[in-house]
Length: 160
Image (cartoon, rainbow, N blue to C red):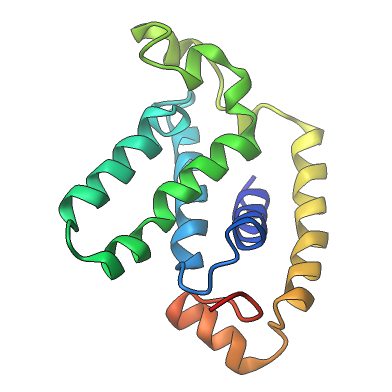
């Protein structure tokens, strides 16, 4: 499930935050990062609440006093949070609250996005439909707006 996370994170964050200054490429990247844990066969730190909080703290500390740098890179932890919501990881106490729910619980679970079977394919199809809606909503048919998203991570039609 790749399209589901990338598209829904982009749409959800754009509609909730309504910020033209957020780098939506980094939001999508953050939302996709935990899917690579599928290579391990079980969820790891990317599927826990610890990951986005630690990444956010790291960004805020490293870029202390550099507000524009912080604003740009905050897209990554926001995307990680979006992944947790879209994946339903929050419903798995052992994984979501690791290590507070126990240290060894991560390897006892399956990666949620790869254990859904046909439901996963249905969500991917729904994401394609929503991508079409987002294409229209954010005016991505216009080459200049597409280029702005691709090069700068900005979506048009949002607050400035």
